[in-house]
Image (cartoon, rainbow, N blue to C red; front, side):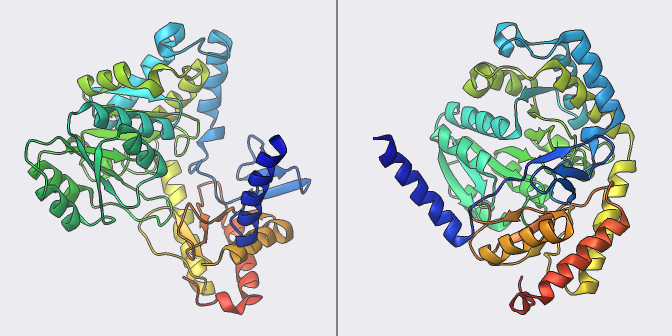
Length: 404
């Protein structure tokens, strides 16, 4: 019987391999002080990482590591249970206070990941608001989509970043129906940024709660790293700001911020929170150190932006196709799954540059890309080497010259 199941599994995997969508994980070992270099165990040598979501290199920042070591020595490895059963520690409370302050909200609530915070929060609020309708941007992250689906609430999908289409949907709903407008600030694949103020205008006109995913923006935007909403002075107009501790802040975990009543509501009713073992105290301590540092320091953000500008200019000078956007995400467009995989492999094996290909279902078929996220620890010489390698690989594939 197991063999029959395995045959089915293998056939499905063979299909992914045939169309170039099969994902291959590199066995990498980060070493403190060497990032964005990492040791590749398959190749037995160092490679340069270009696709990390540790956007600012905070995963190896001295203040973060010091705080984690101290908390490990003080409190041990794990939290000891769920937050409800002995798992709430002092570091959790301090981190939630820090995050609430960062976003100018009354309260915050920690989760084990950004995915879980979206899934549990949207799933809980939409399910427990009677007759709720969720209006979701067409390019929202899978975690938001899954949360909305889990809630079983009615939903409407509005065209990506299309405020007029959102207004049309809202205008068709009864005034007394609870409504949630769910959207992101920075969209992780194309790197475009939502018209937050305009969305708030429409949501407020129709009495809708606003739910903003800032996972690719926290730490990165705003004078304190509070995200695009902070940068634009709009945090006070957002009902729920959701973020991650695993990207710009360089650690792991997710969170929401909002009113005290809303956060307590999610804490009390969300199964994804109630039944999950709490983050280890050392993780919370490291994340808090990262948040506190980035609230005071703009050095990392300035270095990251300089690297982005330089890479974009080098790509333009080389005639390489990349999407223009106002964010830190640089999608180099290949638009063919097999070619994207081949270029990624060649960058790694021939030149020592690690960039995972992005393919279906993360992006639609035909829009495959290399998603590059340069940071403050990438040197100009690293960028020069990468662009030279890309230019050479493009010259070997003349059919790709007009890609994107």
